[in-house]
Length: 465
Image 1: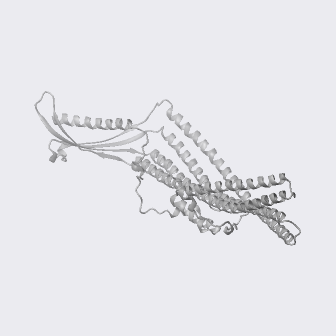
Image 2: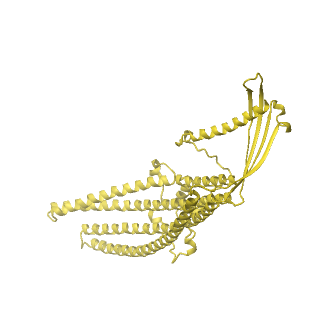
Image 3: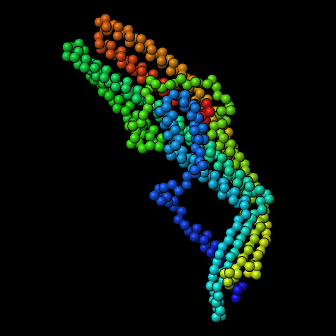
């Protein structure tokens, strides 16, 4: 009777395991939103986020001497959702590495199965208590599982470079957006002065037309330029509002707070950014995309090695310790114990060519990743050279525009002197003033372009400039 119950319990254990597998297979694969959209990840009190500031090289940003700009970058590091997702992806890959490493360790399980049975053809019935314990281990003498763990670990290492690239990109986006907003503040201020001048010109033209000094066509032309100035002012305001909304998203705030965002005045911007003559190769090979490409080549090589080892046999060890008794108090006794220990070797001899195909897939994948690595190398050199060229050329251009603006200001002084002497009209004076304001707009645009290109060089060098 006891042997029959034991067999029935063992069969029940196998059926329960099979039933669990079937249940998992039938589960709905549709992703569901977390309850009340709350994070399910517990905060690690030992977590130190200081490495994120090293990613962005805050010392370089301090060269702008703008505490508001560096404050926004710090806010982005703390609150930007893309950066949070990048950091969580690193932790996700880390846990995948741990999960794969578990395959290198023995697997141990235990259970408890009480049962009450009455067999057919008998009047006897009794309780039975079973406590099974299982252990299994794949002897990794060919280091196949070890290589699989190394392969997954390369993904984890690559995700850290993705995280670093994300922080550099967001910091660059914050800096570029902020500088363009400051530039638009200045441009709108200048454009408002231009609109006032054109309005004054239009009014003077109307008076002159009434006195027969200018034609109606001149009045219409002055009115058209006045309306065009107001249209440009509206367009500039629209662009600034959009950039303010964009900056809010970058620093993790609601766009409803866009109007309250602080920024420095344009004239206080420090554009004294040192332009290097050349960039060392050591800087280029430290770019996060370059380093990740290296890790992907290493991973592809490990995957080829794993595919080769799939042709080798698997050696497994297994153990069973099973207690079964009719009395719960006497379960854990040697008399009621069943122990077994064994091992086996499994060598797939014919799999329809799947292993050979898998090996070729891994080899082709390795060659593809290797070509991407070569391309990443060339692209990195190109981007650094392009960024360095833009900074140098725009620096030279800024110096020439500054000189041109100074000459325009000098010309305006002579015009103003002529007006004070009564040799030219007020209309001639304010037209010269508009020319000077147009040069101020051009100078402001070139100044910001140079600073934005400096940020582009910062990004191209992986913040190691």
